[in-house]
Length: 352
Ligand SMILES: [Zn+2]
Ligand SMILES: [Zn+2]
Image (cartoon, rainbow, N blue to C red; front, side, top):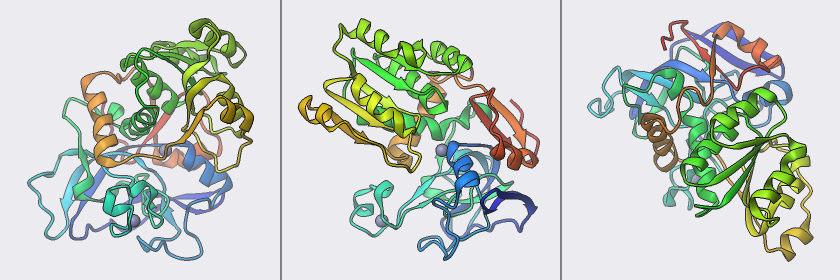
């Protein structure tokens, strides 16, 4: 099969590799679409960040070269020896899990694989979905209803990130949220927050992303208009919750400033760099700073798929441009600036 594999910084090759073989408890997934994420771009431009170069990953035994890609939708194409084929028959459309825990540590025993010290992330520590096929743990694959097409289902992973981020804010029903950045996750967060009865202001520099945020139900503003919009909607108190989705360290102090006293700032975007925190504002105004990382397959990915299936997240919310595997290196070098999400069709057969 063909795969787009990370070899080194600025060296991702589309190449022929052996088909993966599912082990016991695993399934073979034929990839329909795999979204390209900021994480993939960061690994291309500045990696290795999370990719294992010098030694194999302790959990998966994987090291470079490896296939990137964690925003995967595909169909079951085979089962490993002893894998129960009745739950996920061949042809079932699924979202494979992204975050794998060791299964034995204190956190994993409490189903908190996201903070497992030995965790492995698909497309970084084991082969991902920028390939014609991949293998996945059968038990954590989330089935997708037939009426959800690949172009929509490919948003399940970022939708799961949005679902988890919203949950971190606590109950904000009837309140006001500020979303900083209207990339795929910012837009999905905007929509799920609006659907949860929250008034949302989304701040974004790019015109086409602001238009998308408006479609998602937000009051869409330029960064310089943000303070005035929040003041107007909250009588000067500040937003009940601020979701920082840009990952730009310089925006964190601003996110904290836009948050009301005793409100919550959820840090969703993360570039790996440290940020300055205006401590007086946090301490004296009793603001909460909360992190959120990826998602869990059952509580978050399942919820994301439900939002896609029910129409809360519709195909027009995050327009997807479909590209071929051969375009991956160029798309990582110069991400497409005119669209919110690019998804790769590894076999050139995606039908919408
Ligand atoms: Zn991602
Ligand atoms: Zn663990």
